Image (tube, rainbow, N blue to C red; front, side, top):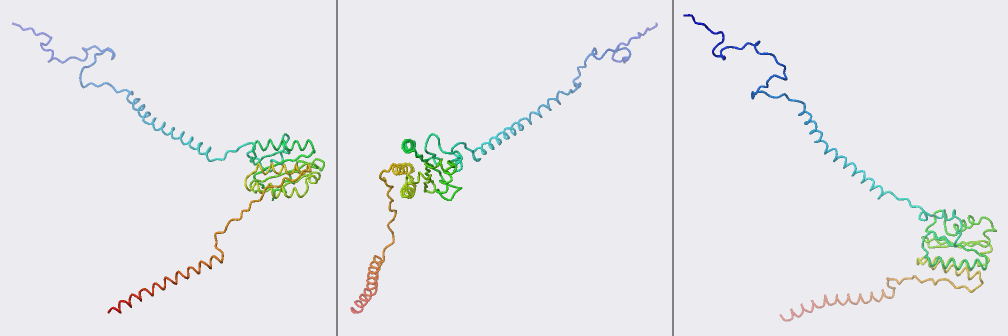
Length: 295
């Protein structure tokens, strides 16, 4: 009996598979392995995320540093505005040179560069001097300045103003200039030949030595200017002199005692000291004598 063996094995596990028996397929069509040990390939997304997180970690310090820079810039500007001198324009920077260069006032008789006169005084002064000019043809200008830096005193400055404002004798013949320096508490009056003759040297000297300095020392600048104007106008009109302010006696009582008072006090002091010495020596001796006599 002949046994026929099949070419196919009974157990496929014992038969190795030929590599050529499996058809070659493209990678996209090949089945994926389900083995747990198989890992997917790592792409570059992790690197991108790491780079983005790194940049974000440094974004906060950069913004903080930017805020600090802006804060320092604002602080420096604030300090510069607070401590740097601010330049003002207008009359605040006016000096005695500006008064000279600006020329005589056109609509008034006053240049209040010191800023010490009230509106009422300015109005009354304009009314008084305009009436004088309309009647007597004398023009008087009043000037107030804080201090003088170019001239030694108010008289030199008044002469300089007269020469610059009215260069010729004809222009300044009937013109008068009255200057009051508030810081130095002094004043001066000058003018053309006709003005000096009409007022008189006596009134000029009295006004300069009484009205201007006395009232300026008391810081009564309005009264100093207006009383001087009335005194000059009265002299030009030939009226009696209204006079100047009374000089107050500023003599103070001394705190020191006179010689007579000192001698009287010295005698009383000697008497008191002598009495205390007698008591200090006599009383203990009397007590000691009484104590010894009893024994």
